[in-house]
Image (cartoon, rainbow, N blue to C red):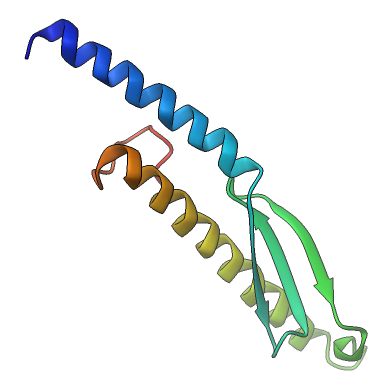
Length: 104
C-alpha cells in the first residue's frame, strides 16, 4: 500500500469521524437518579440539554439530597454520552482509539 493510498484512507476516516461527531451532537441520552426523581439529558457532544426534577424531591430542609441527585444523574448521563460516542467511533476506527479524533 502506497503512501497516497494511506493518506486517502486517513482522509476518508477523518471525514467519517467528523460526520459522526456532527450526528452525535444531535443525539441524546438520559439518566435518572433517586428512582427517577431527577433525570438529566445530555447530547453526544457532552452537553447537558435538559434536567427534569420531580417536585416532590424539592425539600427546602434537604437541599443536599437534591444536589446529590442532580450530580449523580448528570454524571451518569455524561458517561452514557461518552459511551455512545465511543461506540460510534469504534465503528469507523475498528476499535482503535485515535488521539484528537473525538474519542473521549
